[in-house]
Image 1 (cartoon, one colour):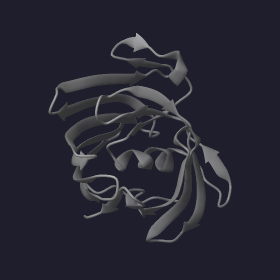
Image 2 (cartoon, rainbow, N blue to C red):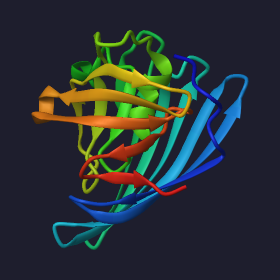
Image 3 (cartoon, rainbow, N blue to C red):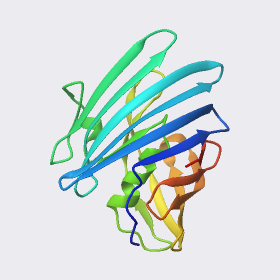
Image 4 (spheres, helix red, strand yellow):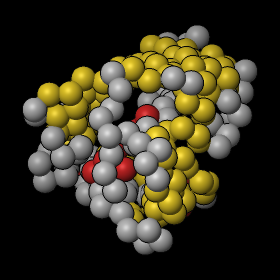
Amino acid sequence: MRLSELPAVATWQHTGVRTGYEVLFVQTSPVGVRLRGVTTAVEEHAAWSVSYRIDLDDRWRTRRAEVVTATADAERRVDIHRSDDDRWTVNGVPQPALDGCVDVDLESSSVTNTLPVHRLRFDRGAPVSAPAVFVWANDLRVQREEQMYTLTGATTEDISFHYESPTFDFRCELTFDAAGLILSYPGLALRHR
C-alpha cells in the first residue's frame, strides 16, 4: 500500500459524540513530519479546545507530542516524549505502562489514526496491533490504548480498515484518503477539506 503525499492543510467537521471542527497543518522535512493542529468542540454540554504539535521521525514514529487543552475551568499542558527504545515520559516523568507504544492517539483528533497507517505494513485481512499513548481531551490524562487495524480495502482514492480498541470496547470501519488521512470516522468526524 503506497500512500500519496500529505496535503499542507486538512480539516474535519466533528459530528456525533461532539460538535466541532479540527484543522491540521503539516510540515515535512528530510528528518520527519510535524503535525500541528487544533480542535474546538462541544461534547456533553462542555466546550473545550485542544491544540497539538506532534513531531514524527522519518519512519513515522512519534518523537514528541505537546498538547494544550482549554476548558471553562483551566488550561492544561502535557509534554510527551518517546525514546529510541520506545520508553515514554510524560512531563519528564517515566511512564513504564506506556513502554512499547510507538504512536500517540489524541481523543480530540481524527488525525492521529494516520500514524500507524503510515508506519506499519498491512496485508488485507490480517490484523495489526498498534498500541498507542492515548491522551484524553478535557484533562490530558494519559493512558495506554490497545488498538488493532485490519486492512479491508484499498484503491487509488481511498483505503479502508476495520478498527478495534479493546481498551475502550470500540470498533468501527475507518475510511482514509490516498494520503492516509481520515475521510470518515463513524460517530466522530468527516473530512471537510
